[in-house]
Amino acid sequence: VFPRRVSETTVRRLSLYLRTLERLLEEEERHLSSSELAERAGTTAAQVRKDLSAFGSFGTRGKGYPVADLHLRIRSILGLDRPWQVALVGAGRIGSALHAYPHFRDRGFRIVGILDDDPAKVGKRWGEVRIRPASELEALVREEGVEIVILAVPAGAAQPLAERAVEAGVRGILNFAPIRLRLPPEVEVNDVNLAVELEAISHVLAGRDRSRHRGLDRSRDRSLDPGRGWG
Amino acid sequence: VFPRRVSETTVRRLSLYLRTLERLLEEEERHLSSSELAERAGTTAAQVRKDLSAFGSFGTRGKGYPVADLHLRIRSILGLDRPWQVALVGAGRIGSALHAYPHFRDRGFRIVGILDDDPAKVGKRWGEVRIRPASELEALVREEGVEIVILAVPAGAAQPLAERAVEAGVRGILNFAPIRLRLPPEVEVNDVNLAVELEAISHVLAGRDRSRHRGLDRSRDRSLDPGRGWG
DNA sequence: AGCTGTGAATATGTTCACAGCG
DNA sequence: CGCTGTGAACATATTCACAGCT
Picture (cartoon, chains in turn green, orange, cyan, purple):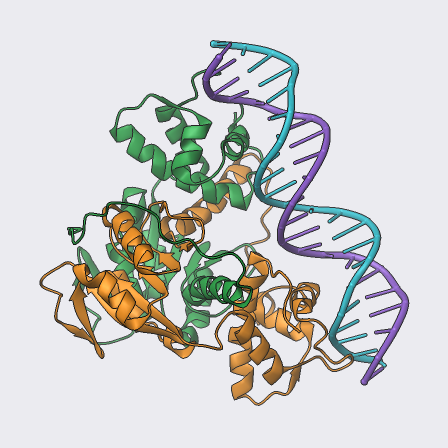
């Protein structure tokens, strides 16, 4: 049974469900109910069932969903049942953080090349990958069959690099540059804009200040172990 | 005239409009129409007008919106007409990238403290800010009047740190840890999950591949003539 | 003529509520 | 019983279309 149309919002939640399921697999749980999954993923039971109904019937009434099967199904829907060759364009701080992010590799996103234009960086190695000059973008994409680019360069450099990547065969771009890329519509672009994320917070906080009705009860009792490390 | 309820989706677009307006201010443009703004921000003219109607009438019929006024209005709605004291919790790679991100400072988000538990990092300076031990979280929040925390620590460390921050008075958290924080509902939490962003792309690309194999090809002709695709 | 502002129409997303299966 | 699967009700978001101002 293959999925009908899965909405963008559902897809994002599936990714969260997957994260939860991975943890449950380690704990060898066999089944979990929609309400348990909802609780762990931060949504509602009805929402979980609606989302999962995209696969057709899958759960067992009275018991819930089989963890292992559900895990595989979601992986498949998200396209994670195959590896993806990814190029990291931009070896700055954001690029560095993304390269070190362990969850990409875990889920089959292989960073097969890193590009930068800074001569001080070119030639260095990050793990097993050598940083190459940006002029080799097309070569990299073709040699390695790169389909997804993570674009972590300043706004001014993003557009031409994106065009070149697409021209060479890239089909998806995760864009960290604070600029709207103009690309053919068949290219899947996903923008991550950190200013937007912070401003969504400041808007809410400022709005609450303006309409100061009920008192903010922040005094929850909780015994917090102070000063514990996170290594 | 103060805004009625502004929806979350509208707020996120306002942040994009703001970015565009900042550029136009530099170019000394006086007015711009909804269709021009839409074009630059990647949405539709009707959407722009609906979003801006949250402020009440503002544009001039026949001319468009006054750039400088609109800029101020959006800043105000987003809560950017005042500075925000921000603490960066976690001085790893993501923390480093965020600290260096210039757009935060430009918009009034002041990183007034950086915390980490790694003794090798504590005491070092990033710019003008010294890295302090995580045990000083409460002190930092109170001394500096921190209202927003950027949480960039591993999943296992996030929950207790978030609780301590909230207990000390923090009202908003930008969370990079791949875990669902459980906090009182009056705390505004915004999750940034990079795996979700990449998987949204792989899902679309994998879905297209499946369609193509079944002959339900919805994608367009892949010939990329540079003149037509993306001027 | 050109463009805003907005109700009405549509599309999309979420919650409810319950029949029906294990 | 408990829990899924799902239509129907509800809520939100986007697009249309056009009256009305400059």
